[in-house]
Length: 510
Ligand SMILES: Cc1cc2nc3c(=O)[nH]c(=O)nc-3n(C[C@H](O)[C@H](O)[C@H](O)COP(=O)(O)OP(=O)(O)OC[C@H]3O[C@@H](n4cnc5c(N)ncnc54)[C@H](O)[C@@H]3O)c2cc1C
Image 1: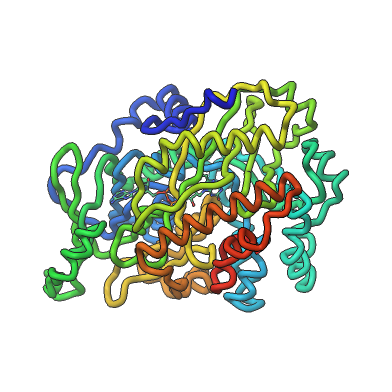
Image 2: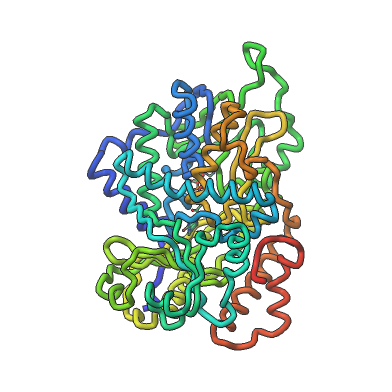
């Protein structure tokens, strides 16, 4: 069956197809409710773009400033990017606690962890309050070792949490306890994070879109922000930016100069003039001159099985918990209400200079690698048909955490760098960005250490970044695959895969 795995390429993910079909059946008028921008318009806040970060920001703005004119620009449809393609794990950051301690100190780390935990509940509360059927399932998340080399990967987080009286946030499990939840023959000991959930990711994105439209937010889908404040994405944009200076005009009332966003869409070129802008571009931010040095784009692929509820019952996986192994090139898997398994990860690749090309959605090899992960974890399911596969880009930062900041001297605010863990954190990101956009200095979200705007360290320049990422990725995949076979990967593979850690990045295997 492996030979049949084909990623969907330009086609939408299964999640988004399912969500759009449900939306069309329930509210057919919604499809046309976010037409491309035609001509010029103005806004108090313009948001690029329509993934979770942009949509939660817009939602928060409707609470902070109910009368504000908010315009969202999305080049595709809302949820067309990773927000409608991800694994649907809504996790908190307790498993990142050592990194949080390192970066924010004890009080800062606990406050950030608490905020991320509350964000999981906020997703559920939003769905309940607005009748969004995004399959919110609050059943926790299981990390399981799938090879001796993966044993105890969670222990630094468990120990750090225990030392601060937070031991119940991430609970170690014996091999028997792990296999009582999900009976994979390769699973060994593990850890359970009770405060995590799963969702149908695209249904959540489309639900946010619906509520925003109901609240009077203007959304233009099929509309790309082509130039922001005089800057353009890509190499040419960078070159042009160095030759072009943004005009130093002031606003018409003598106030600060508005942000000008030039757009293009099937309706033609357009423009938004706004008091402030929020850039929620995720991996696409890497192509913009401001952010490129601090982001690496990385692909991730998901495969989805046919419905197999009886087979799930055979392996005891009926509790709805998310599951991940403990590789760096992680496999993450979850079930759906109709009894499918969606499994992602197992490798991925870097993009050159922030580009997001066909390798991010069309790679048969990467989709097959994800499928091979499924067969390894569940040999009993070898005959199960893979019904769909798709990929998407991830925005990797040097410390594996997002950062939320503002451009110096300009009312342009940005949030990205989720490093593949943004479903829950984007709720918090939206609060931070909304508060920045309307200058609510007293908003509790701005007191979080993660809102300090401090950027992560930069990656090496291209082409060293791309070549280095490829080498390290190959070494990590080969090392972890050999370790799964209980073979010794040898010193060279081990040391090359550890290079990012040795160089001080919070990335890659130990
Ligand atoms: C395969 C995969 C699996 C994942 N699994 C998980 C998971 O299980 N749990 C988890 O927490 N995270 C996961 N993630 C990461 C998660 O999806 C992201 O962190 C999250 O969706 C980020 O939301 P966002 O709004 O910042 O970005 P996005 O959803 O990427 O939204 C950015 C949007 O910007 C638009 N855009 C780009 N450039 C422009 C422009 N110039 N003008 C207008 N629009 C533009 C894009 O079309 C896109 O819709 C996964 C990611 C992938 C790819």
